[in-house]
Amino acid sequence: MKKILFPTDFSNVATNAFVHALGLAKLVDGELILLHTYELPIMDSQFGIQNYSEVYNTIELTNLDKFRDEIPKLRKIAEENGFEAIKMSHILTDSDLLHSIKETVKKENIDYLVMGTSGASGWFEKLLGTNTGEAIKSLSIPVFCIPVGAKYFKINTIGFTTRFREKDKIALQNVIKIAKASNAIVKCLYVESSDSDNNLEYIKNGNLFLKTSKFNFL
Image (tube, rainbow, N blue to C red):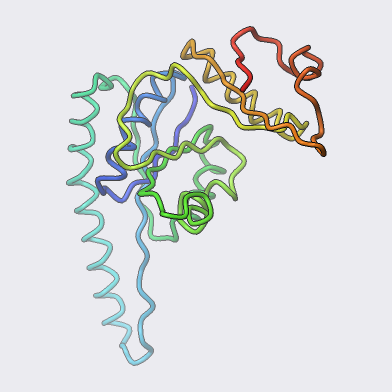
């Protein structure tokens, strides 16, 4: 069974992405692991040990209570969208989000990561400064970025931008797996220039790693 990690802060952006995570879990016959993180503040050295303990305990209890309150809401969303059979487990940890994601991916042998993103006016450049962007750069597993307001629907077409280099092979193979599970078409966008590594005719003739009829070239 595939494992899908879904980090959430219980915001509207994350809740919207939750439905997509459920849909992916159903598609790949997977289970969902919900991750919620919080960071303990750096306390001034003038605070006594007892004050440290009181503040930290209060923060931990507050986050635990919030976590307990939100889980039933997410289960209700799963039921309303027909995903009540999806297995879900939960992780609550006091750590930096990106660090927690990396550790969980390694410890739990995560196959996919699904995250919501509120978007940025500079698109990819500014996205790289967000938690989602950092996750994309630092992880070797497929990362699904769900923009705010993007409604879930069955995957029919997948866009894949590539120069068809060897290092693109693993990413494309992951895309093909999702496409086959969803019976979807993969549309490959390849921009040929004077210094391109390959030419379109070479690619279309199947001399690389394309052995399926459900590819369209753009």
